[in-house]
Length: 333
Length: 265
Image 1 (cartoon, each protein chain N blue to C red):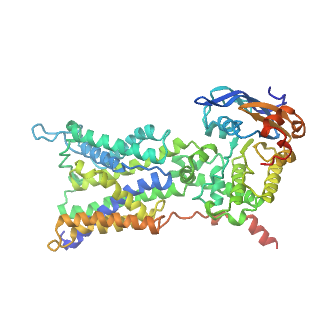
Image 2 (cartoon, rainbow over the protein chains, first blue to last red):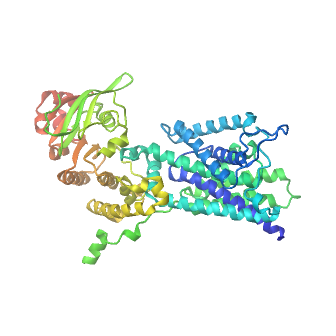
């Protein structure tokens, strides 16, 4: 199958769009719904990526210099599931430390510190995920069964990540529409009051933490299946803030807003700028300008539209308002 | 010193709470009868708010016992105490600002199966079914508090007085056995004080026990049947307001004497 090159470029953008949507919805659950300031969100994406990598890679070959644990050769979708589970488990451990007592800004500092510790640990403990060099040669999910060529597989992978994105959309939507989502928002608005009304705020925040981290882990697993390699370069602190920018520009607490933010920031600015004609701009300049533009966009949003482009939707209960006192009065008169 | 209340719903015995060297509550004991409309009064710094925080579990209990509705709730975490039926409010209005008025009521209701993760993700009908009951219940409550027309407004856009009403309406939705209100009349205009007072009396008649932390002694005298006076972290006296006004110990402690007649907040 041979299609015009533009199709493959669009496919690349589509893959990133879907993966970043999953990732940002996870942060949307944590911050948008439950108000958890997780400033090391990218770490959970990275853990998902690494774990998925070592579950899908064959055992390490001695002498190659690439060292990693496990190497189980598991087939899709098990490594991806394990990536989500591992990130969720790490989120649980961080939550045990950070969510019990700490609020907003203190929690944010703890997450930054935890991220920094994990980053340094993964980089230096080379037995785990091959240190600063990172894991390479991660197999393409499913392709050992269907044996597609590189270009065709690219199109196929769009379908895979799109399916996962739809699944993530489904669960996020259900959560946000549920009483649990409402209680998460109450905890976000005022944790002490929610607690005083019988809500186990620790449990509620922990659910959001674990669930959001699992989203990040799955997204990371999908990313490493696409790029085939993953190293600490791929999850610096700055990467976390790209996801934050997506969430805040799109609109926290809004599922479609996240998609919009994702399109604007990830597709147009981060990945889209890769396709800019080089020659009149040096590649380094493009990268620097890209970050400046994203930063500027974030500042403009926070200044002029602090709720984001699409704010959190106001919940109405129209379908069950029939028989309300007002309606009865109107009917009686 | 606990008052001999028959069938007490809340018993505080020898409560202590110190912030470092400051003994905010220092041997406070009292009992509230089931169905009472009681008040806790006392000069600033008497330890009333600290007492509320310890009773509701927001601050740890350092000594003494607290019994509520047949259970020893000493040392329980706040949400467990709340689920047992003891609901407290805060001195300043603390509405869930980014949620609608109706949602503020829905979220405080107990027994919502949709709050479990599994049900939220895989059995949404359970949550919706309970919500249907809660919405009709909440709309009735909003109607009685004359907040019905504001049901879909964000709570943060309400006026100060409306927020006070919302606090009470929201507390009612939590189906409390006892409502512990920390200065519900603070910063409220006289007309609204009247309305709040009538709401409290109405709810009390429906069977909810009330404990008001209140500075407005006129209101206390008018609506409360039992008053606990606190000073320097202890229970100074208990009884009806009219008796307490003649108690020289109370008069001395309260605003240095003499002011008790006129002190209204």
